[in-house]
Amino acid sequence: MERLLDALAILSLALFIIVLRSLRREHIRVEHSVSWLAASVALLALSRSRALLERLSAWLGLHDASEALIAIILVVFLGVFYRYSRIVSGLKDMNITLTQRLAILEHKLQRQHEETQDKS
Amino acid sequence: MTPGRTLLIIPAYNEEGAIASVVREVKETLAELPILVIDDCSADSTVDQARMAGASVLQVPYHLGLGGCVQAGYRLAYELGYDQVVRIDGDGQHDPRDIPRLLETLTRTGCEMVIGIRSKESGGLQTHLIRRLGIHFFRLILRPILGRSPGDPTSGFVAVSRRALQVFGRSFPLEYPEIETLVVLQRRRFRFEEVPCRMRRRMAGRSSITALKSVYYVIHVLLGVFINILRFDGRPRRGQA
Image (spheres, rainbow over the protein chains, first blue to last red):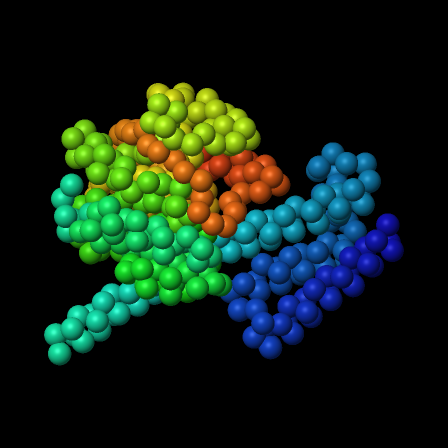
């Protein structure tokens, strides 16, 4: 169990550092980094507080704290993935609309250009 | 037919082998009908072929899929003030001689959409077994939703009214739109009619729906149909005007 908690602490720290590094290099926008940073901090706190983990485990009705830990990790990452699925879907909708608007405006401009040429 | 108020749209993706013939055939049959080819970012000479044949071309800057491509055409038609839009496929499967019958039905019945369906009686070409099974399956699924069983819910030969254009401009399926479109119409209590039409073999190219993709097609369309039933009316999706 201790080894699992240590591994989780290391992974959480690694996630935190990777996200910060990506932010510095502008690979991730600040508003999209919050979920990952929050998830890494939550998992780090959980990995360093055995008492909290045992209380959570008892509350969930699990005998083993490691089972509770795995369940919590799963829920945290599912939450983050769901949030990003929503963000990606929203971006795709906006992208489609922009693409269609661009095509329509280009078409209208081309028509205007052709009409102007015909008149002159 | 009302010349000048009807637009013919032809969504096309890599249809260089057929698009020019399709455009010329429409021009020979219905000379007064403006033709708009919507090119879904083809990698071949579809755009040049369509322009040389005398069509106007709406070029989408990246590949949107059939639904996104058709919706762009509907949006443009609505903005330009067209009252009716006819959509035919760019592979030559649809006979332009049937277009006046679709438009006449749209005007006479006052419905929002007319579908040109594959019909044995009209001497049309019958499709292959897998597609026939698919059509039958979706007819069964759609029957309780629509209150009737559509003859061919997968047909891409349609005429739509201005009211439908307005709705489709806001809500239109991105992929495989034909079946979901019927549910979108139903959500608005819009009506559709069917007209038996001649269906021919595609002039060139192959269908994008392969055997493997047909499984994805069924799942995708089924999900789309049920989500459309659940979707709250009048709530536009993000990014949609």
